[in-house]
Length: 465
Ligand code: ARG
Image (tube, rainbow, N blue to C red; front, side, top):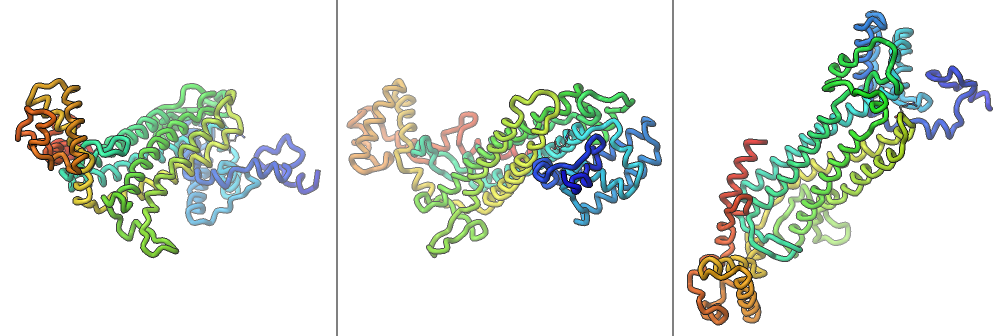
């Protein structure tokens, strides 16, 4: 054991230790590079704790005041980039406490009464994740507003609706955008639900068993905006399902973003030509001068990999951990922080892209007219006008489509005689349902694609947003 190790005995817990850690031990143990992001939450938690200790007469009012002043000073130092983070002090909790000792002396040593880093970090991380959920919910509201605006300006634009990415039936572009509004609203609700469920305070659980001091956990919970203290101290220090739930919500949201991103990639490809992104959201190629690449959409499409990876990473960290705290849990933060950074970026970029998109009406109409997209309308006409059973109408329509294909014509270009060669009872009236505009206008069932439905839904969303 080198003298250097002896000298580096940990100031915070070195009492029973004769020497400091091996260099590599220090390296694997230190989390400060990651958890320094919790400084705001850590200071808020300590201030709430100190105020409660004083109110309960566990420490003196003077000591609590000195602690609060010191913590405010530390907040300023960190804010201004003047704070010196130390690896030897492991994590954000010990870094702040050590600095507090420098600043205010003995009272700082009383702050950790009736508290452990275990309930401290659980509190900090909960507060951080709570805010992340709030920020995601807000970002989703912004994205939904951008989509509702887009739906509004394109409420009755006709575009192909697909199944299997084959042209299926015409729909309105407004309806298409509103489908994403529905998805993102559920994502937002998932973040809100997760936030509500996680909003309980671990503080005061201490190391794992609670504490003999007459603490007031209701008071610290209230001071930190939690609905109540967590009821079981073992659970309080060792549960991370709040973060898992937030990451699950984030993963689903990122998957939804990837689907919309993929649509933008397809729409802006020359094969579709349905949409264009301005220079602000396009990138060029270093070799092919003609290229306009939708890089932001592709990156939004990719983010689900990292976000869902973070969910998986934390799930596997937590799997099989016995109660209560284990140091494994220190590895809960890096991926979580990164996942919410990624998601915030993707949500903002997507909101920007949606606002930026210019849609091409003619290209979408032309595509919507292809693929015999009103064949279902023809079958439905046969049912309604001729009283045919749907299965039979389906069969007859199939034959008419085959005929149109052979003649190289669209359904609405086929002559009445041609259609009558398949089903003699067809009349001129059939043409009233074969246009794409008639098709979308007819989709008035609740939740359907008709422009009037789209307008009603937009009004509903405007009210809700
Ligand atoms: N840095 C630690 C973490 O993030 C804080 C808790 C440490 N607790 C302990 N008993 N060593 O989990």
